[in-house]
Length: 323
Image (tube, rainbow, N blue to C red):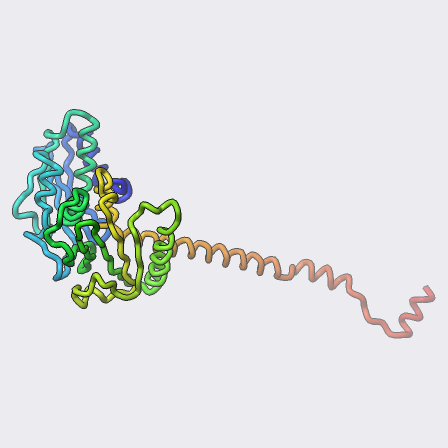
């Protein structure tokens, strides 16, 4: 969970504070929204301080993706495998949410290291739920087992009404992201950033990173994709994942990086905009200072006028010469 510190830190902080202050029995009712319209709601009562209800609302899936009971395929199994008896899945979930789980903090491991590791996993509920189908496919790749849907296009939701696509094969998995941005400036910056992203992959230190390609037109892998999924304004990014990229602990990092790739690009686009705006403001300030220095000083003009020569006639100048 390499990126957990920056993306799910708030949920982890709430869980940690609750565990450390469990005896105080404070009422808890908190809503917040994460990137890509993932919404959370966590509740705890004074009567049962060890019990927390955590609800998660996922982005609206496009029609080509497959959800089962409001969740991506394999999400229920992934939750049970990751959390064990600490979490109980409530059916049906609370209104306006895709998932509601009851956390029993009294069942956390007594060992502090194991307890913290499990809290980090609970805080990674977004990656557990939304990355479940992606994890299944990449896990088969790491074990080098033949996928049942080899060569088929597998759409997975990652933003509201938007999908990215997987093409699983025995020796590799190709992942294609159609990139869309609402703002025209964001579109230009994103296209430039993605092309540089591809070029950076070719440097010597990144030889083992997944192969990366960018194109303004749909790649051949998306020839069976629905037409609405191909309407983009920042091109298509493709990654080729091999077994070495998902071996052991690399699997978690790869699943998280792929499932949050659009947010990663959007973050850098916004940072680039902020940097350019800062440079522009500094440039304008320096030009204003230069203009201020170029303005004539009124006091200097008065002194200059007092020292100016007076035009005299010939008779006046001859009279002054006899003095």
